[in-house]
View 1 (tube, rainbow, N blue to C red):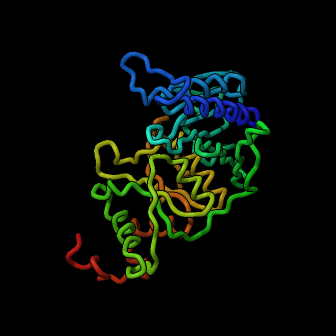
View 2: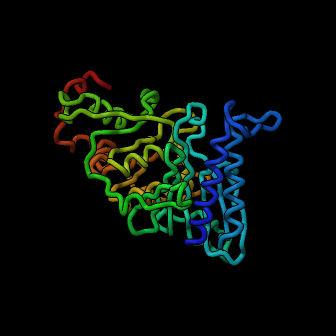
View 3: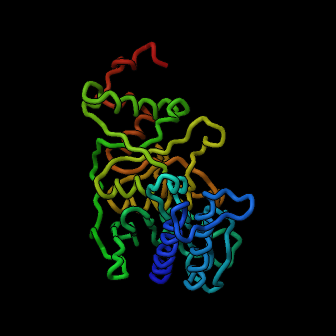
Length: 320
């Protein structure tokens, strides 16, 4: 497993170089092929780099979110690796953080069932790289979640935090509020109560963050706590959520849990879900345990939330 993680880390350095050479100011700008969306080019190159890196590791099966097809590599390999090559790719245009997410599972041999149709509890390792002002790596091997930063002078990743500990409570949340009208009532109720601040049922002011990069939000939560919400909604194609269960939600959930947090699909733990397909989507709510548990109660029985009176404010009889 260590060989595979080191190979992914080496590939991340190459991906970072590609990201640095995208745009009109770059000295070696990567050009799209005919008819190709220029914004997709870095992701395509990142996927190729990661696949090539896995050929030199004991990896039997490889899966990336862009291609969506399982690739057989080493027949004697013991691992199955799933990656999201370039999370937050739209951030290239605004020079904001991007990332690479990966999940390592035990390979299945001698059967027709995919190695990737296992619960997240079976993961051997999970992590992500953040391509920001620093090149950061969040990694868990099942015993705590650790953060490393790449040192250019030393040419290696240096451990920056021994083990992350997400505080159980939070007053900061991340959600794309532009989709408010599409959320179910439980999600709207939770956000409304947060927005009510000290005058509302939570009796506390909350900060909101949002940017089109899952890894940037989770990195922040690992550093200082908070909660991330990517709920299902009533838009076409989003009823089962937006994030890939195998490529994104499972590795993020493992990292968060081993840092003392919790990750759910709004009600049930993400890591207990068995994927039906390799491209299965899921909602994701993760971060500080107290807030994640509260959101589950908003979905299952909001009347159990003691701080909020039945007719509190705009939660009265005339609100539907």
